Image 1 (cartoon, rainbow, N blue to C red):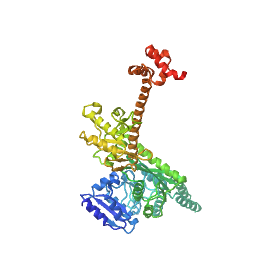
Image 2: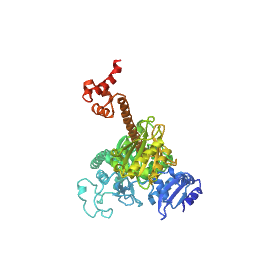
Image 3: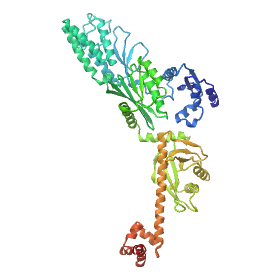
Image 4: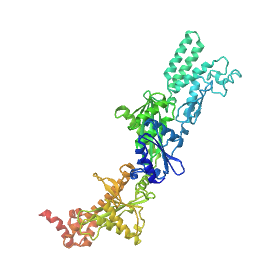
Length: 608
């Protein structure tokens, strides 16, 4: 379909909730999204593309056709979106990392004698799954701890097939297994131990301890002292198990606290897991920063991260309010089989926990992101924003500084690979201007800079990929016209300031503004260039003005020409030092009559 056909189809969609699937020419689903009103949401992709981030523009450029599915409600659209993302894994959707590093505990509940095992992912096989957990080592430790505490079999025998066929293995003789391979051990005992293991994995340590304590008391009352002693040992083991953080780390929490940090290259969500007020574990998920807002990132994270878990916390603290929080809460509650509450605290202790989670996310992003990656990302964002074919390796920026008709100057700063290259800075003193004229000054500066290039001056031989002018569209236009005289087509943009003297936008020579304030990394980078260029221009102007002032003061002294003025400045360094020098010091630099003339010029006003 053509772009106009896509736009026309989008405008014909109903104002109903649903899901849309964007597809490329091969029919591959490249994006899945949900909408409160399909017509409004989908048509946005084909209108006002300048407001899209780089990722969205790249996605729209590849759309060949799209399909929609009308849903009965926003909640149904959310559930359907989550299912379709899992199925198609679209390139332009926010996707969590694969769960290969986060194993599950599987319980084969369909077997007469269920067993625990570690698996890489959940399957639709009728088994029960717990997790995912932080790593394979921790997961195996949990399984081993449960087996040891509850005296469950760890051998390779299969029950009931192998019951009574061989003598019990060494584990039974060491007290690590109740010996379910013996015919005298009822299956109900194994079932009871499995139920207790499930309770432990669900965090119900108190309930299991109470049941075992009641059974131990009952056995003692019935004078079954051997059974009571075994139950006592099991109770001790489970009490110790309940205190081990690794059993509950990662997901057995009353409350999860989410923190989000968006960096120039990567973003991260940190999840802190709390159980009965104690921090028991942490999960971190990294994303490539593609221009998505916090709300979009958090919504995708919540549905994907918790949508695959067998157990969920009762409360999730969020750093941002989400428009679809009610639907996501309902989705997670359905997944958990009980209410899961989403809360965005504004103050107090819970807000402090959010800040702690955000700091965890920030530290992880800073840890894994190099300075070179950050710089490369900013240059890529700049190229996408102003539609360059590739990131600009060399950027030249220009600014004019003056105070009246005298000492009008310009500064040229250079940024290579995103970093200032101060050795390449150049400065210009305006010639032939009757008064301050920023436009004429900028035109003269650009002409002189590229004339030097054309004449073979090595100091100006390297041409920029992008030129930035401190000023508006008229400044950019005169610079662009000057370039045309040399047959050059280098992109030129003005840096437009806001009321606080910060660059708020870039502007083309024909007056089209490109906002940058919505992209913090790019906003900071352009602001840095603008400030550095302005500082250089002002600094050079101040230096020239000081020299002019010095020259003016010495020019008024009879008998002091240019050569003697230079000799005085070279020796004393400043007019102030010359003024304070005694006659003997001046005679060491100038002939006697000239020295006396200088001395009298500065001392006579004081004497009068």
